[in-house]
Length: 212
Image (cartoon, rainbow, N blue to C red; front, side, top):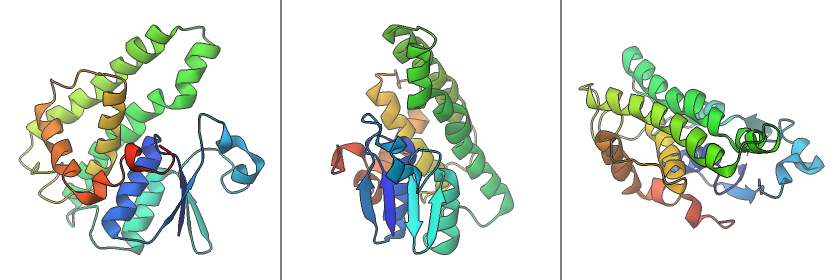
């Protein structure tokens, strides 16, 4: 198994966590996003979108982190990333998608660069006004779900980490890197701390990657 990623990519971070939780042997191959390596001919031959992560498992080439996470959970079922009941699975997917569909795409590196280079926005407008707005909008929603639902446990859903936690942790790292105020999300941050106490999450963090 090979994982093409980058230390600060939150999507690649998700898959690193998942690989660690499943205890899979995986070779990590760095694709430097700041250097534009994702657009090289060699890499786009593997992933035509020119984004990370890409997971190669035998003859399979898998792309898009959420699809990769679902694949890993189906192919290597223990520990499970989703609850057994349909209502629980829907809740966990919903929480995960607040990050993966609502927050992350708007704050993706390509979007931030476009705001500056093509729309003429300065660093303050991009890194603070824009970035902080969408982080707060998403995390505020997650906090309300976590605080207001008895299904929340030590983790986003119950007392075992799953898909929602795998998505949440990299997003909190991004928020911290951009110096967002996280004081208003006590339940969310308690889940984050519970995750980071686990070796699978800690070992996946950006600062512990070879290309950090």
